[in-house]
Length: 223
Image (cartoon, rainbow, N blue to C red; front, side, top):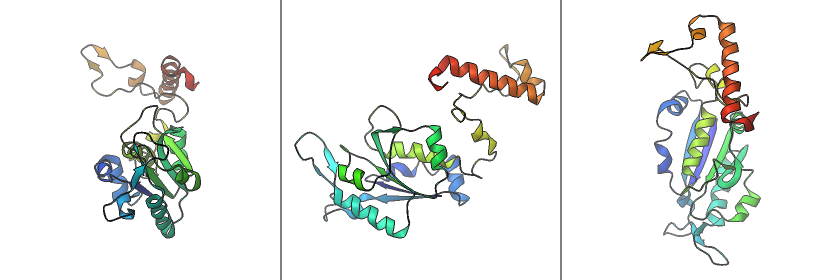
């Protein structure tokens, strides 16, 4: 999979992709992440990519010209399955969206900044708008990192045990069940006996029951 990210501050993303599972995905050649500094397509020698908004009001807006030029140039190299704009007013990101995006081959992510991007870019280039929650960040970089991480771990071969992702919370609209590890008794806090008996069928039934119970208690809206 190829993921290209357009940003006015790509250095904010470098650390996010240099460790842990995403680092492993890149080293295996399963995920290629390309960071592009939007100022490469600035309208002048001063690196300008933003301007005041028409009609007045506080906050700068990323201009049409640098974004359009960047998108057009990148599109000459490859066809993108999705051009995603990270924005607070986009559709809330969830596991099902991550699953669908993990099946794509080429994705371009645009990180908003300042007051956002010129609406004409959204109208003529963007195919999907994503929010990671009902709050506002300084820019779309952290949100883009969240989306890339959620997608990257789903790619076949990235996780050592691919079944791990299938049992994550939200994969089947249920929260994941409680998990335990050694020792079986810590400070008189005991691991549920059923997990120690070694009966896979009973353990699976217990986990399903716990997932349903936890979802009913914490996220009934998922049911």
